[in-house]
Image (cartoon, rainbow, N blue to C red; front, side, top):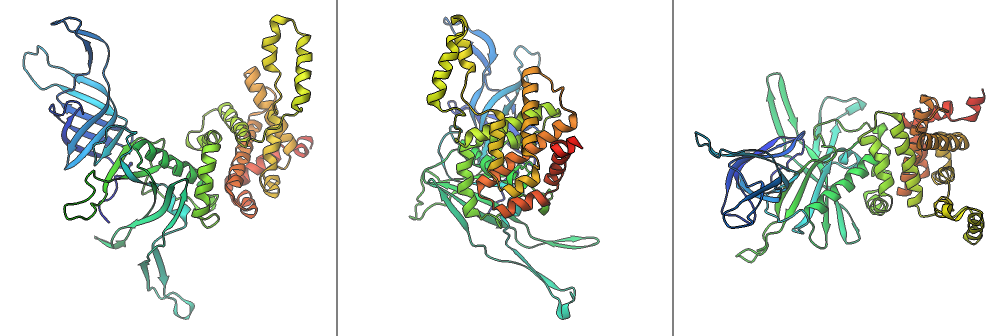
Length: 494
């Protein structure tokens, strides 16, 4: 199986020598530390020159305001090459003129690191494959190498049974020249002797390998990690963290002296994603998950998600942002949820002007003719032939399965009307005097749920599964009750 990847939720450190790529002869000892909460910090015994200086004339050194940063720093530690990217000095301690001469000290912060290779930049295409593990991936994939059997003669368990490892058939799909493969790595059997008993265990980890026809970069790898991370966040309806990223580096001398191909070298990535995955945390509860690969196969969902992700990324980012970093105030969440609905509708690229263009243009010119010339340019920008927010909300309500939508939003007319009023009041007046707090919260939850239902429908989730989600998911059941209580004409009039 080889060495395990470096988990982003585990601390680590490397003591070695560090240098700038354009000055390999000047190597400074130091320790690189990674902490999940703080990121990457390089502590040097010695220092790189971080002052910004010029020499206008020989013998004259001018020191300018600011501090130097470094795109890349190389290192060698624990028999591995290390590349640090986006580096800037955090603290420097110089000893010029000190009574007792001691080494300089310098602390450098880096935004990302490659453990196992020297690479010139985050965009250098030096890797043959990217491997990504994120939280709940195995649960979503509905795939494991383990099989369990309980012995039950005469219909009753007798206390015996087995757990076995079975070979897994690879699931793979190609999207625009990039291959996505669902893979597993598992540990060998391990018996942990405790004073009170013995624990036997194995660990199965699901991950996705992404292989392009051409080489890829660190920036590409982080982009792929986010692509997978956001897919699982949508499927599980909760924030999803990145557990590890590993790259495959093919050496320049890919052919060995014996004529055979050299194995690809593992290169681990350390950086600070917006959520760090906890590899030992409990998986999402089954009834909290919108869908797994049992409902929509891996080979189906990956191509659809790749296409959707590019086309609808802004709307996806906004609605998933309510999972990753929910605002403390309902007004922020209102603008985010309604903004996601507007952006999603625009992303469908189905806008039809409410008034035919051939009719609207002469109407606009006739109206502008009645306006003093000095105000025409200002008014011209206000006369737009676009769908209103209410039009867009109605259009979104028409796209998912209608039985599921009606269970979620029993009164579409009132939801669209009250949502539009709340957003307009907040955006134009800076407050929402016509809505109670509970109604605003209901608007946020219902609008978010409508956007999510649209994304699931666009992904190809069946009408039956959409109905099951609205009926069985605890949060969507609560959202439907709030919609009935606060966004239903019958309840308002009762």
